[in-house]
Length: 265
Length: 345
Image (cartoon, rainbow over all chains, first blue to last red):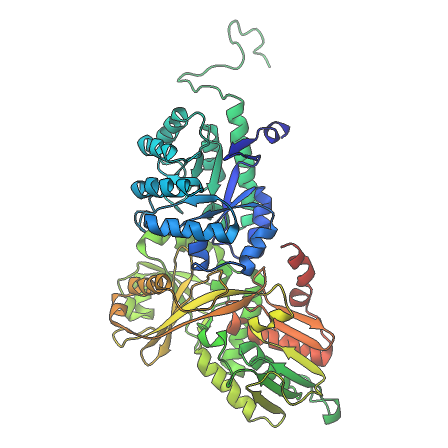
């Protein structure tokens, strides 16, 4: 494991060693949430001001519990449908959590929870200008991704599949193209991850990290599932670093067959 | 029940807080012969978060997200509310999922027990008004439901009729400062003593319509909250409840109201024409693991952390509290969990 411990990555100047970011919603209890976050070894947790606390929240016991975990908080704007809503929520979150980070979500409709990429770019521009460090939840569309980078985003977070669907990587081709197109921008697959194998697959594509919530929170045993994801993310990262073999159409024997001198065994 | 001790040996207890935890504890002690003074800072019993409870006695359904302890303690409530204080109706409960959330039903079935997967014809027999609306449902035949306000009134009536019980409303001080035991059942107000208690906002509403009738609670699977509709009779339906990590009780938000109403509408479009007769919201008292506690400090017992399971857990906790007072009993599952579990958070 030594290898990946030294394999840090950076976002907005912050060095991170864990490549798993987790959400804090829908856990059976704050106690299980805390245990799962510890098991995941995540250094960053996202919290939703809007969905989870109905907008208030400063000083409540729940936020206190999260702060006591000693992790970095990445507030998100989950549930925001308009640029204005997202900007207001981000400003509120900055006050509550005292961080310039914000995971920016602008949702186009409640049925698909797909990002409204037009609103997203506009909100990213406003927030970046206002000193925020924006983590945009987007699609794999490269044109939009360019605009987000232009708007000031130093990280991109494309979806794997719709939020909460657990379907994994719907468009591996698009995700691979995005990696190739932005070799130097940190990329995080955010949303749609259902099982550890999905997370490992995304890491093998060269993604820098994985962000997920439901797959751990709604598992029968969230703490064990958190450990499974930590291992899968690590495995996928190691595989990426180790330069995996290329698949081929025909069998390729791992031992030479010519002559078959020693087939008796 | 142990034999009544002689007058001189009878313990005396001051029960502070007349929500469901305090009322059941007071009644249990009084039934066993203790001299009880029930003290409540409000003007009447049951006006805290008990007032907004759903009244589902669903220990098996709750197993989907709650720890096994809730189910074990909760099963006791079924006997309590059907035999000792018989205010519950035992018609079972039904769990359905909208078409797009069907995978959730399989998951719910896997995580719970004592249910039966039924098809549309059986649904139509149980709930004729839901005929044709869902092709599958989970039926938990042993579960029950009650009207929390009626249950509070019935407990209050019984307590008022007992010679060894006195009431003191409108103040937390009480009259009997000589009581040997204090049972602190103040819910979230006990945070001054229980610093790890937190509030979890819950929102509910009551609808009235005569276009549809239900015989039992129906739970609609929802990605975030278990939304349920509990029939209260006379065309009234309680619709609840959100769970939000907020400690400002405030009012029901528009978003929550929309989500709750949307669930009712998904269950049956007739709910769109129902009248909204009540909106309610309050804070449930919960510990970090969302499990209940009886904490003993000398001759004070704190009964708290019932979270979303007030009517489900109160009978078992009341029985335990009485056993502690009368028999010096010890219940590790609710008394010893503190240190181990709290320090972890």
